Length: 422
Image (tube, rainbow, N blue to C red; front, side, top):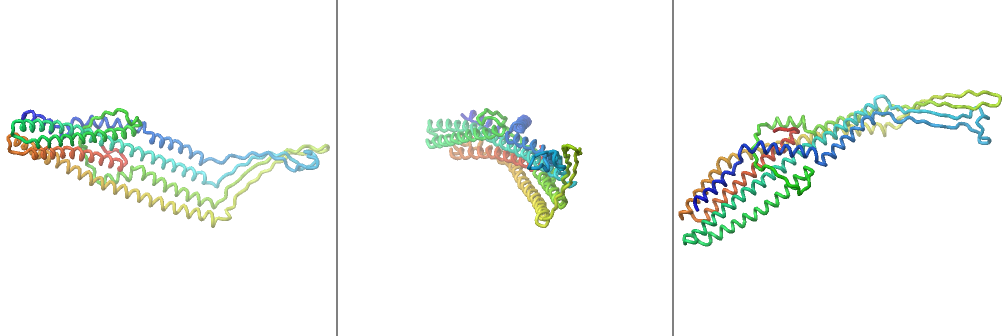
């Protein structure tokens, strides 16, 4: 039994650390999933349609209002309703156009264009978040699949332990409690496997939803994760975020829109113009020829209540500018804080991964091998054997979990930086 057991153990240990050749395949598959999500995700397509919608507003905002065409009858006597009796009876047609004070339309166009930039920023921010969410779900699914594989291999090892315990019990060199203890461990292992299978289905459904597939659609991924090198400083990521993060760009555009709105409010102190022309057609009298008549007019609005209207509007826009500026600072500070937190998390994960890979797992492996050798010659009890097996299994899972969290942290940092980093 001993050679077979050591063969199973060697195979189990070999799967602890992912092979380097798996990295490229994994990254290529992940990139394809991200591309599919960016192409098909309905939330993103909805946002894209919203951007297209708002792009139609700047030309509208910069256009004059529609001219007014009017038809009138003027000075028609009510006793005869005759168009030729009175000199001033006319059939009139008029055309008028309102003209805002110079600069207003341009400012309205600027405001509409800033709204476009705000919407575009929201769309780009959503792209980053969906990319991040796909990666988070992908890495979590990779962990679950790796945990399932490790758990199954651990299950096979436990079965070998049971065979040895039963063999020793059969020849009177072991006790039944060892067999029962190993069977309990195997049952617990099976329970963990059932839970992992459930977790896999849930995470697969979540990833499929991000890709706009049916939740139950089959999804095959290479589940070996290779550790991504990370060499950025916190200052580099903060600078990248300040220059590239879409939410900060949107808030800058918001502040610029409010400044344009303030300039527009200041122009409301000046009048708009209403210019028009009339043509009046007169019927001839029996003994008199009456020429037609032409009129022109210009009207302006008088900002008579500026103290309670225009001045208040300017004050309102000043407060909006201040609010937009402080909102930008708040968002920037929050992003910087999240970068710091995730940088610390990544550093912690890197240290743990190195410790587990180079120190703990080799030690746990040696301890288990020693326990197996000792148990087969009755120098180590079965409980010690199971404890060593459990310790190695725990650190194998811990390694996969820590590697997953490390890659998740990098995905979050990429989103916070506002651009691709890897």
